[in-house]
Image (tube, rainbow, N blue to C red; front, side, top):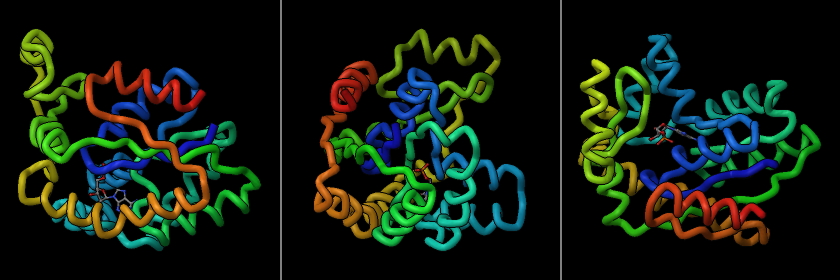
Length: 213
Ligand code: AMP
């Protein structure tokens, strides 16, 4: 199964991709996670990427094409994958088409996760990660016991550097201007499926599972 997950920052692509990939035994390919790993390694490329990401802008298309081409050619992607955060521009969507053509494999579906703006803002501004376990939490939605458990295991609640209000506003503008055209790209080709991404993680997962068939 080869799937592209589309949706605004905060729509839950990462959370849902992780669950679906674990259930199906296919890799979760998140370009945001790959870039954050490069930043953490402190390479020259990572330093350049960090400045772009901290501002909420996009890493250039040709750079992203190189990253994704290498990742899709890895053996674990041969039987399927879920792409989270790629493609983010029309050019990246065209590049992905060409890449999959070369690999001789089709994309099964592009799934658009729809959420209202006020929910996106709460999900993004409230998002935290446990420094010990990597567990994703949200200060507005997680149970008090889950939040307390972080301190009990000696962890801290970390916030992504690009989850501050100023950067979030730019990320949402960039999404409207550069990523929404990607939705049209797949809609015109007839392989876009809309999923209501409001509600709990379990509710959204159930809708995705039923949309994927
Ligand atoms: P994400 O974790 O998907 O929200 O991505 C975090 C940041 O990484 C984005 O705001 C961009 O700066 C960068 N990024 C991730 N994926 C892409 C992509 N496909 N094209 C360009 N920049 C990207």
